[in-house]
Amino acid sequence: MSIATNETYKGKDGNKVENTHWHNLVVWGKTAEIAEKYLKKGSELAIEGKLTSRSYENREGEKRYITEVVVNELLMLGKKD
Image (cartoon, rainbow, N blue to C red; front, side):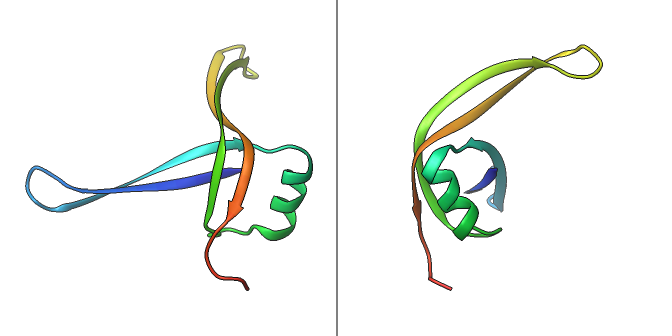
């Protein structure tokens, strides 16, 4: 799954700038089961994990690189439905 993080700051011209970054998550075991059962698009959460990088070849034989967060702990935030 992936999550979005938002960054907001004032640009050189003083106007508000908002950037959204997407991060790929890798979740295993019981944590994955909980995420599948309870999380939905827009859910707020906090994660703890480690960054990992790997490479693979796509169908055209080109080497691609990817960085992922391997999740150790997941904390659901926000309101209960």
